[in-house]
Amino acid sequence: MHDGVEYTLPSPNGMVFQSVAALHRAHVRSERKIYEGGVEIGVEKELCAEFGDMDSPEIRDESAGESYYAIRGHFINTLEQGKKKGWTDDERRLVEKKLLLTQDPADYWLHTKPPAGKPWPKYDEIPAARIAELASDFGVVPEALAYERENKNRKTVLEGLAALLAQPEATEEELAAV
Image 1 (tube, rainbow, N blue to C red):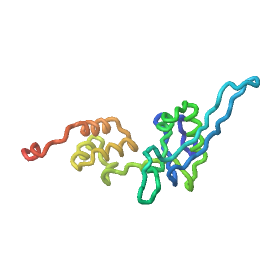
Image 2: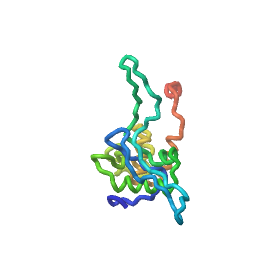
Image 3: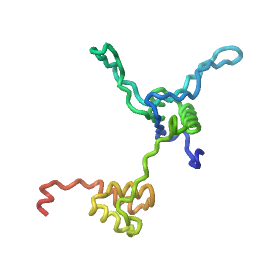
Image 4: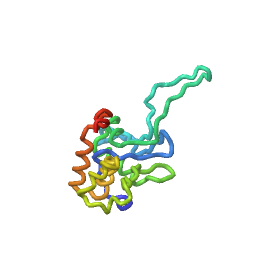
């Protein structure tokens, strides 16, 4: 539990953290040798969460005589990085726990998407049976589905909105014929 929220670790879809700096590194554990009876039997690998991505090739600026790399992002997805680095579930659990416990707005924090807003002002006052029809009329079916999932989560409303999204959109010719 962190800040009143209980997390399942390792999280099924990974956790996304954001950093103030690209290529920020959060050290979780140093590499260490494992001994038994004075004999080395293995190595516990270093665990380091790396924010951003520097997998692009080197870019050479001939006019300046310098090389640089395109650094993308200030984020880490623990599931994706765990796959890339070969982390076990226990190692990913340790990374996620450390990142949760040591996050700080001046350094890095758990990235959460903003909550879905109401698709129209009086959404919560409309009977469930009318939501899908009105969402379609107003052209806000995806927005209504997102808001419903996060707030009311009514099965019939979710099914109705999902069915509308599954329908192919009408072509201009079909609309002109109406």
